[in-house]
Image 1 (cartoon, rainbow, N blue to C red):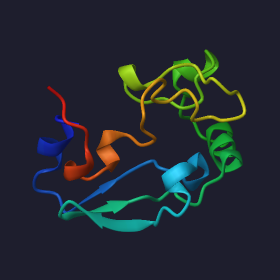
Image 2 (image 1 turned 180 degrees about the vertical axis):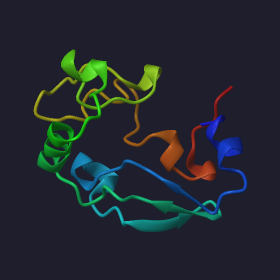
Image 3 (image 1 turned 180 degrees about the horizontal axis):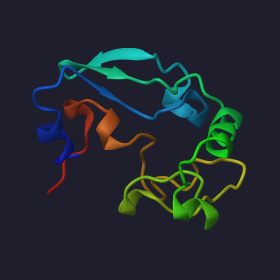
Length: 115
């Protein structure tokens, strides 16, 4: 999270890859939102897993190597594990932690303190 904040300085908006089908708090994800003084654009919010699969099949963009190794949802190193439930693509995220969203997408006052 720390490297993102200075990278966003001077910008009024940023683009995410979040999608509603990832569930939990993302089920009602808007295309545009305003948070922490800037807009967040979620152009893939309406995409389904099928849309993602089709896009990769028709584009010339390679999949992340961990996808072939059984990781359907990939984040930062400490927050990514093999899924506990193969039917839940997000079950490998934040294993053993009481959270359901990346720190990049929660307000500063909602982020856990790190010492």
